[in-house]
Amino acid sequence: MKVVILCGGKGTRLYEETEYRPKPMVPIGDRPVLWHIMKRYAQFGHQNFVLCLGYKGEMIKDFFRNYRWHVGDITLRAGDSGSVEFHAANEESDWTITLAETGELSMTAYRVRLIQQYVGSDDTFLLTYGDGLGDVDINAVIDFHRKQGKVCTLTGVHPPGRFGELGIVEEGLVNEFNEKPQAAGGFINGGYMVCNKRLFDYLPDNPDMMLEDEPMKRLVADGELAVYCHEGFWHPMDTYAEFRYLNKVWSQGTAPWVMPS
Image 1 (cartoon, rainbow, N blue to C red):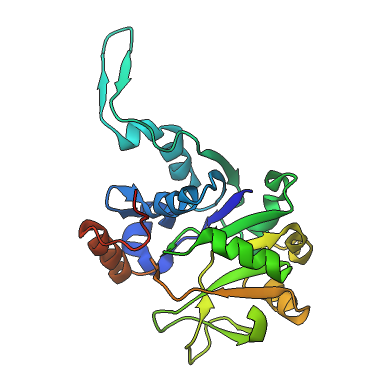
Image 2 (spheres, rainbow, N blue to C red):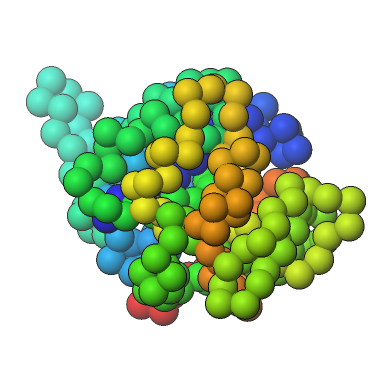
């Protein structure tokens, strides 16, 4: 089952960092937030990733192309032989990563549409954003999705108070999807989605289309959008204050998204 991660936005609210790099590459500790998200999925056994690149995507390519150079200690000989010794074991050696160019200006629905070929023969794929961290039980969301039998299941999370709101009815269905209304509360879309391939039928050939706009509203209208309500930790990294907060909990060794070894 592929894990599709949206990595193409400009992150304008975090301009202090994203002026120089794409938001998924903004660091928490010594690794980019994207790595932390991927690590969470990998700990649940999902190690086959498709990264939807856009703004400064070459930096993400460089990070993974030279992964062992970026993350470990190295001894090298500067002479003609060019021998290199990597001292740390590569815990991510089983990861498979497809780096897909989905356009610098594309919106989220179009980015997902463009990677359909990389989902392969699986009926189901996982989908999330490249800037939100949570202690979400990935496999519990998958099990819930299979029981619901809908096109898409998103993970509903409790927000910091500035996001859009989900209207939720019984049996885990969404009956309303409001993108950033004036008054927010309850649950919001935290990503960590599970999608049937039928989702591609809802994605128009329009680079300006947000997944969170007409596609989500059509799913709601068709009764095909479910929500797994997550009561645990979730936090975005949209602003400099949030960047500082996430780095603080990481440095204190209390990061909730990290599973015990």
